[in-house]
Length: 107
Image 1 (spheres, helix red, strand yellow):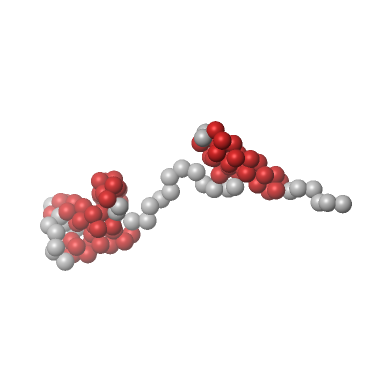
Image 2 (image 1 turned 30 degrees about the vertical axis):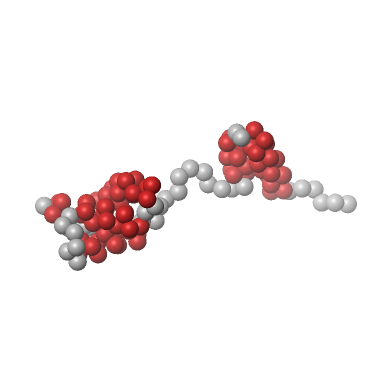
């Protein structure tokens, strides 16, 4: 006698069905439902900006830029995709306030 499907088996089957419906209807709610059933986290994920912040700190420390803002902008230009530079600048400026950046911006 065949074993009964487990709840995980049912969730996988329903997720596959939701993906199929999403492909047919182009309704993103079904794709989201499939992701939830598969245990994927929805929403925005945290961005790891350590490399960009380290670069900005190094530029500032080396005296290659005059302010925290200039260092952040330069780091964003060098690390972020071209269409996300302004977004990266705003995010890095916000994150740099939480850290110890010493510059002429804060004097």
